[in-house]
Image (cartoon, rainbow, N blue to C red; front, side, top):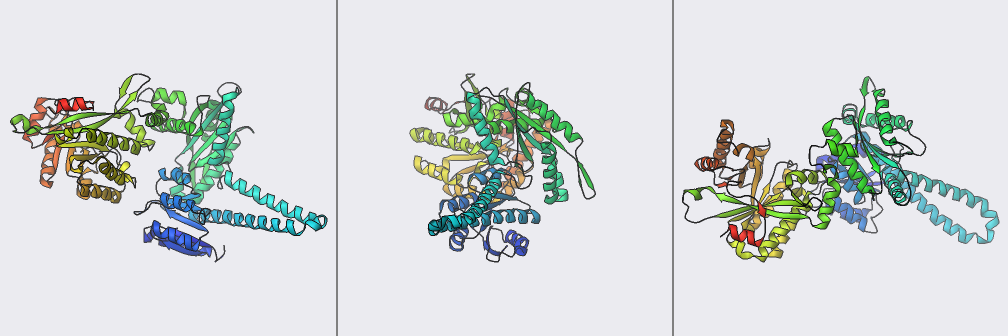
Length: 605
């Protein structure tokens, strides 16, 4: 490396910048640091670094937005960007916005140096290639009259240029650790094959291989050992493949094989061969020895599959089922659908949810929330309701409950789209019928903890209230603990922003998770919804009664309102009232129904 080489380090945490600076100081490069996205954009435009190491999670502007803006500017669009992240979910999004590579947290010095050197070498070769191109153009113009004499020299230079182009093409389509094809090459190969399958009689299978316990090696022996394991694994498996098989590394501990099936189910046979081979495969590092296993998904490539994304979504679903059922096994697309303990079409959730978003198949339902003292002769009735989501299954003419599709939507990172839809639908309905909202004390809407991590989600809600001109204090957002709130700072900022607007917040399913009590102290929840698992049979189960009683007493001491879910009998409602629980929700009071003007008007009359 040259001291003229500039590397821009971007992270809002000074300690992380110190760690990266210490790791890279022996590369003899000039290090530039930025502690925010705006500062990074300014320094990148002014100093034009050769490489940028960019943290994903930053408060003012996240790494994905910084990358997008850098790629949109002519001066900075070619600067390679390596994302630094602790979340595996960020990797694919990083590549989509233009990232060249990624570094995982906790930071490993050897990994950082290896990936930085790789990108700087590639950048240097690109610069040299541009230089060669400029020189060649000039020489052709200057030496036209001396073509015969210069011919031999030009041939040598063209050969050198061709070598560098071939090298760049290789780097763009191959994984530098294993020397296998990379994700980009796999996508191109599968897309071309699917196009041929549409018009030719071709039988092929897609195998997704997920190495089990790879993290154990990586974390106990270091990333150098992990890279060596990946190299040995790929070399070993390559020996089982034919010349026509396409072998690629997707990233991390995931590999893919595309194999042609002349007769029988060659995909299944190959998967069995791989697992049998792994039984004899041992990885040794210094004085430690590791046995390897893998989970393998097999997906047939047929005319039903029309895109690489569709193939990957199906394979990811099969791997998910495989790891849940039993690691170290083979699951076919058909078998995973049969073995799944969810709906029989569970394995198709990826494509079904994408279609549902595009075709507006979601529906809004509602359930009234009863003011419990009303049974004791409250003078003025009070009305609240919770908005619920359903999915219309046109093929089977039935309504699907959220218990079936929320889990897959969270896994596939589609849940923010669903949350935006339900917020937009609800506000639009009450904007059209403001007299209904006037008769309601409060409207509750569920939000996933995944959505509140989205940088622009709070602004989306604020803009929606402005667009529909509705009072924010009439709305309460319920956040469940089904998906842990992994970033308390972003959650706190999200809630504080909307509380200043007037919105309320309820912690849903309280009591079902270990983090519930911590959330109450650290986040601005003003309401608690007791998990229905304790409420439903509290009149016959002393332990559940004691749990509800303790939650109600604790909430009272903290000055927070309590709502009980799954109130299904008059006996339970009476006990809740005696314990000081203000509101009850369940079949005893109201069964959920489709949310429209007529149904709401009837319930509020």
